[in-house]
Image 1 (cartoon, rainbow, N blue to C red):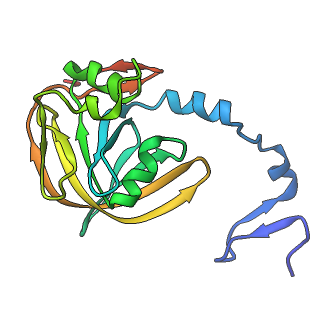
Image 2: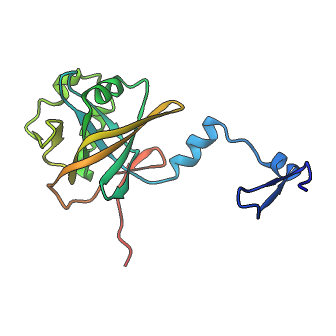
Image 3: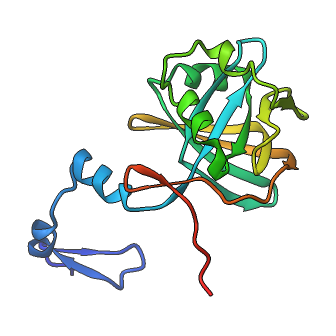
Length: 188
């Protein structure tokens, strides 16, 4: 029989006492953000276009999920104006930025409050299979159809199947780390 101050895993092999759980410090949003600022992330622009309009935002929360079918995960704040448009259009394209594209990252992060349609006015924009815009000068573009969306806390977690890719540049990737832009230094 299990004691009342012990928890057993579903497999029945691990015990955790209540007193140990009581000593675990609960992480606040502020301490979580501070901890995550120490994790280096690639910087991308995530864009969509379709019957519900054109939109895009700067994103540091993109990762691969599986290669069969090729699927990525993108996280977008629910308060972002792009959130509803991306989900309604059902398509998105991720453009992974290089170190020479800080200005583009800031533009799509809302610096300067440039209207959305004007953010796409430069010469470096194209479309792939879905019709979602991608930056032709980006390091790589992943053109996707949304497969699933999960609402988790303040964000929508979007699982998107990659339909086509475009490789434009082998330049150094733009990284966000310690609340600032950075780049890679390859280890010998």
